[in-house]
Length: 369
Image 1 (tube, rainbow, N blue to C red):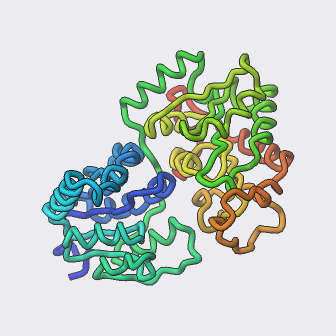
Image 2: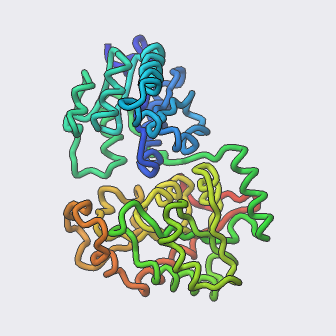
């Protein structure tokens, strides 16, 4: 009986999308689609434990299954960790899922899908690393679709109507943290801009000295608030330090250490985000914020901010051109450096003219992504 038949609707559903953080954020439309189609089902999400906050507070979700990837990485060397991993897989199976969607499409996620022993295990027919072996329902999906639309197409292939709802949600604890953080720095919602100048690979990073130019001008003109917040992980602080140094110690610039939930809270109330192709971009889309995202070796038509072409800047001459595999030139900033400061500033002026936030810190007149 097809899953869309009310007489055989799944009762327990699992979404598998462990990583990366930006990919987790843009998998939310699949969750929204399944919840709308299956209002009475228990829908869980298997996600890396460090990214749980990205989806844990979504009202469509029943619960999360945290995957301790870092700890389980030592399972072959540590028998105790190996036993923990086996127990974790056992609990996954005992949840008795009726329907599982692997939206990651890799060997590990395919193995997780198989481990559930669910009667219907759905994935991409071209899943990498033989991940498709874990499925009993394999669907061919156009590889030239945007990543979000590929996941939506997989949901549709199972008979469910695919939604485009990208909305994300911040937990109450992180909302409280943000209120205290902003008060500490004399700010309110919408009175600051956010800069996310890092990415996993240097080739995706616009030169840091140009970010410094952007920050200086934003502060001088007050175009997007009276202060800036810099987002970067502890391991990326050295990469960002030249920007901080260029501004001087008295600049209204904050460089906090945050959890994923706290970062989401900051982005949910920012007046503007300027960033590379990285996780903060896709999180900001989920909060419908004004964004300027700078692309180089990656193709925004496939991995850019979903349905937000207005937020993208890329080098002239690359528009419509399929990119080569940027992983072969991880530290080469040649392509992204072709994006000029003037082009970015012009787009900042366009985005900063969008409606701001109301007294409750909610977007004024902006749709749900």
